[in-house]
Amino acid sequence: MDISSYLEWPFFAPEHAELAKRVDAWATAYFVNRRHAEDRDSVDQACRQLVSELGRAGFTRYSVPGEHGAGEAGATHASTFDVRSLAIIRETLARHDALADFAFAMQGLGSGAISLAGSPELKQRYLPRVATGEAIAAFALSEATAGSDVAAIKCRARRDGDFYVLDGEKTWISNGGIAEFYCVFARTSDAEVRPDGTVAARGISAFVVDAHAPGFSIARRIDVISPHPLATLSFENCRIPATHMLGGEGEGFKLAMRTLNVFRTSVAGAALGFGQRALDEALEHAAKRPMFGKMLADFQLTQATLADMATEMDAARLLTYRAAWLHDSGKPCAKEVAMAKMTATESAQRVIDQAVQMFGGRGVMHGERVEQLYRDIRALRIYEGATEVQKLIIGREILNMAKHNK
Image (spheres, rainbow, N blue to C red):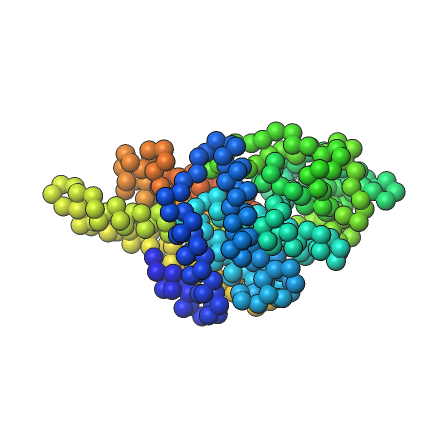
């Protein structure tokens, strides 16, 4: 697909088109004849190298706003994240390689809480190294019984003089095992259980924990269908300086949501990259695959399927970059971001499934591009807010709008 075909939409500035072309040119050169092995050690090594190379190319600077990063496209001292740039980079990288997209995305998500609420000292200590790809970041929020229900987290942090002491576990933590530091969310006061059994979001705080902090360890590594570094983290009498708190005590839940709200649209961008690559592969396959004395592309059923795939991708792309534009314009966009994340990930799943079907037996061969995409897309419908959570957000927002308009 010609990148410029949609970067001429009114959502973008000229700098965004230039950024997309630079990322695409870099990825095209970097991934020529390059494939990742899928064993854990190889994936860890490849991820470290990708963070370093993305930093060397200047792209991880977009993961960090302000004086340490790039923020807005082409502006090196922007004070806020440019979500359109984040989504463009993720879409472009995902079209080439899932691990490259992951490596880039986690630099921003993993350090986002520092960018949004860190003290000047913490920002100076961590963000320059994130922006240059010298330090790998991680976002540690989820627990075994607290995924979508974030308020239910049980990991504790208690004040002890000039320190906080953390105890508990975090799991499904991306970059777990290779990160230099983790933004960790823990309870600093007891959970408030409501009469209906739900837990109030109050009493959660956020901290930066270095990988070498005493009492911190990797409990176990986790293997998933689309290989990337993932782990369960353990905190046992883990002492960290009180100065490593992000924001004030009890402000962690809001900070986690602010961080996710910045990067959730970029998940939609990644889904677009996966889905578009599947569509491109299907188009090429259909044009070359002989069948019943014709080419697969000559059959109306094939043409109808390709039409559905292309329409789904364009509709999802419009929703995604509308949401990114609204965020960058400082306008309310919770509903639009949820619509973009839900639609892009669900549409990409369907498009990739249709591509696998079109490839037939080849489509389920391990290592075939569409088979890889089938594994790559699945997690995007779950993390940073599962599809079901996005539906709840959309429903809540439209009901509030209806009440307001009465």
